[in-house]
Image (tube, rainbow, N blue to C red):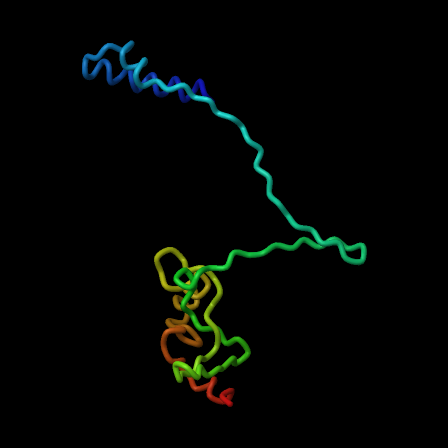
Length: 138
């Protein structure tokens, strides 16, 4: 691998020397680097729990920060709560997936929007599009 990189850089310098009439020896001394590539073994750490002679693999999934999280509202078993400080009701829960690219929603909710032209429970930043959460208020 080092020889390939070294050869490619030399060819580039050779082309520059011909194009700009510069001594190739001067260019190689100044710009041809000493390359030392070390091969490292990549390992993945997997935590294994052994319970009752059965092996289970567990992992902790990445959790998106609030500004990286999908803005779709999920039903979440009709979860409704009232914030006494803001004096506002919250309906359902925010989707826990990462946003897709520069969009506001994850790939799953983008597919739902494409298929149905809307989200079933709306956007977490807006009022729900249906009254189904009202019966869970107490």
